[in-house]
Length: 209
Image 1: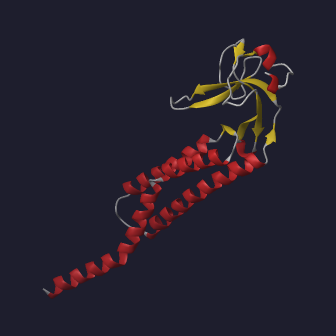
Image 2: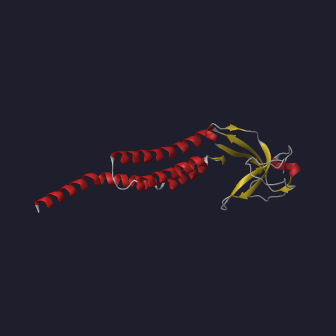
Image 3: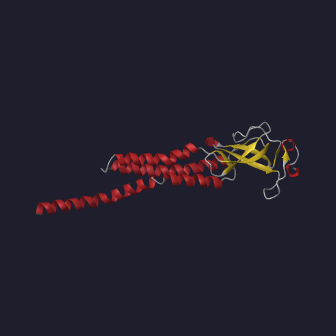
């Protein structure tokens, strides 16, 4: 009986010694599983904070930041429950790197937009088209030759449209770019009269269209 009691006390002492580490390790792994929500929030924040429309927002960065931590968690789970100091430290490093990368993305996007190089201001027809994934719409600006600033294919330029806009591309560091609308033919709340393509792509003031 004394030997059994001694062994039981040793097990309790071992549990007390490793439980805080286990909890911290498990908590960090749990936080890493929420990385997709973190980077979704980061993407939403940058789009709201920057007034111009993203053309290139480095989606590969967002996917890397969102799903690399999940792959790390799967790797840790496959190693089993054996606890070592290097696993705890590595998990702490992954957690810090995830938070740091999210902060870096916001900094990179904001600084790139602040120092972006503006392109030529172009007369365009402005269209609202569905997003590729089927939810919501985005604006596309079609030039007189049928091409668009955004790169979307819209086909031939129609003879009439309701919105004529002056737009330009902003090229920033780290590969970021945006489309900035400088001016439109009339406010969206006013009646949208058809505008001839010849008039939109001319030198006529937008206020007169």
